[in-house]
Amino acid sequence: MKQIRRNILLIGSVLAALFLVLVLYGAYSLSNYGSRWFSTNANSYLRSVKQDVLPGSIFDRSGVMLASVSAEPQADGSLSWTRVYAEDASLRRAVVHAIGDSAGKVSNAAESFMAAYLYGFKQSAVERLQEALNGSLRRGDDLTLTLDGPLCAYIYDQVTSDRSLPAPARGAVVVMNWQTGEVLSLMSFPSFDPAAGAAESTLGQPYFNRATQGMYAPGSTFKMVTLSAALHDTALSSQSFTCQGTYLPDDDPRHRIVDYGTDTSQGIIVSHGQVDLMQAFSFSCNNTFAYAAARLGDKALRSEAMRFGFNENFLFRDIVAENSSYPEEDRSAWEVALTGIGQSKLLMSPLHLCLMTSAIANDGVMMEPRLLRSVTGPTGFTRLGFSSAPYRTVTDADTARTIRDAMLLAVNGDTATGSAAAQSGWTVCGKTGSAEKDGQENTNAWFTGFIADTRMPYSVTVLLENAGSGGSFAAPLAGRIFSRLINTQP
Image (cartoon, rainbow, N blue to C red):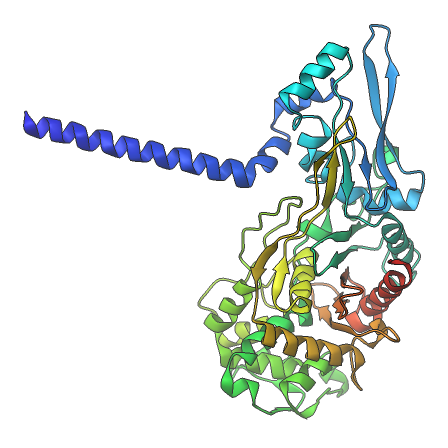
């Protein structure tokens, strides 16, 4: 009998422990995934309630209307409403991937991800009772986003008017405040007009948000991570390298790594001679960084990449972003060398690259990206104000400052690849990238950089698909964006 009691007690204790784990996991999941669950298309309750609620409006950081509501009384006394968007067509197309559309063609934008506010689900019982007593239709909260509407419209016009880009232009532009994490631009191309209800053409996936969901090889922009890892290696950090134009990580001649511009069939070999890490970064020397990655080894490089957020399950309050990935383990020296220059199976989103760049500007501290500036209730009170928060520390402040110096050379040095982004009177740091794509003649053009000044704490990341070199296409666009920021921000 005693043995039976012990068994019953043991089973009861195990069940109680399992129940406690279930409760704790439920609380954790609700805290971290609540907004995702609520906004999903599988939430039938949200779909059924939407038409009975007058949704709130959406504004940019300066109060420019991005989306409002037009309501008309019906014969049965109810109200029928439709979304109304900004009058400026460029502005509508520029912000649609950030704010969303009433048809739900853009996923995880403010219209869906912040639906709990827009459709009044965050209202208190007292507020709902007052609405019931007044006989008024339930109304959602207004959202003020961190977006800069006029800046977004400017960028849209710059990209779509550039005839040197493949049509339709495909890519993404992210602009952030590197001190606070505020997102001023979260743009994807091609875009569409939400006022029209649907895209004129589905060519190029206009509903897909390349800024947050697109996965791309980062090309030479990843050399920020490789440099950070090398700076933590005593031997590599003080070593001088000889770039002879080609590098073989192993004995296989098929695994030859060359620098951008090399064409062995034409006898064109790009080489940089004797360089240190800083000079190699400025030149964007593939040979040096492939060698450094091979010397570091896969374990050290992966560890550094993970500190910068690779293989991280991104859980942001306002933004849903795809997780960037560092390749699987047990790879060859050639694959590791390719990873060091941002190729192999390395994949990341433009938003993540902007976050990494912002962290370098911010002494190694990556701020959480914020899209929501404030929430205003139907009666005009502030339900939620802005708050910034550090997301992770990617490297120590001294290393971040050394990388910043290298990025300064990459924009302002004698043979800088990102010189088109430089701004007179301001310190601009950055890195170009030209990422090869299988089966594509042209490379994806990257530029990522920032203004190293707390008076103008902005970072810019540009991706242009199949455009060519980052220095020729992405850096000039980033330069125009920096100029616009300098000349328009208070």
